[in-house]
Image 1 (cartoon, rainbow, N blue to C red):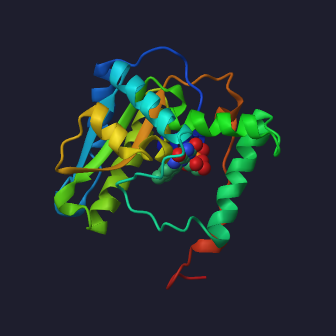
Image 2: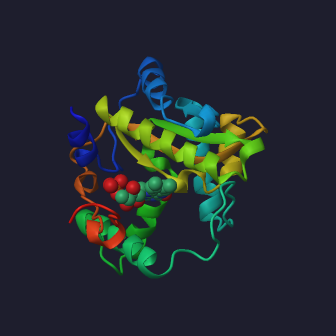
Length: 226
Ligand SMILES: Cc1cc2nc3c(=O)[nH]c(=O)nc-3n(C[C@H](O)[C@H](O)[C@H](O)COP(=O)(O)O)c2cc1C
């Protein structure tokens, strides 16, 4: 697949086949992701590929905490007041697209809750790659940038091998659960996780195409000939 096709056809995958993914394939994919550029080649990232029993324990722990109404326990910093303005509008737009595809009505609280809980279970994917950065650089936003580059590299590498992925903030919303069962070292900070596996093509939400703003909205050209 050429690069443009790879980028254009990738979608977040939220329905997976039950088939496992081999350690060899995961190692191959992570090695590709690690070719990402980083500031001064610092490579501040770490990848923890989790499957099997530890991943089941993470799913169970996340589910238990979220159902108990536990407060958010993330290590990655967020604004704390949720998205506002255009960002909120875009957040709602993709949720509407996904719910429409799944046939989940606006007032169907049970199915909406079920969808949210699927997210906390990392969409029942056979693998979750937890991405951390070295704690020493936790407040260095350049390191966050490096981590994002590596994460997208991971997603593209997995996609090129036929896997489906979703970068899944919900999966690390209870970071202490992930830390415990994945045995994350103390000198690392959990940034995100990527749920991945063989995509279930029957799962309609896997075919949702998220929108992007037109190029005029957020791109400027300066100094070019007209
Ligand atoms: C940092 C980050 C966190 C995300 N967390 C979630 C999540 O918790 N649940 C989810 O369903 N999708 C999550 N996504 C996927 C986004 O919703 C998705 O990338 C976006 O809607 C664009 O859709 P696309 O990936 O299909 O192009 C996340 C993406 C990123 C980059």
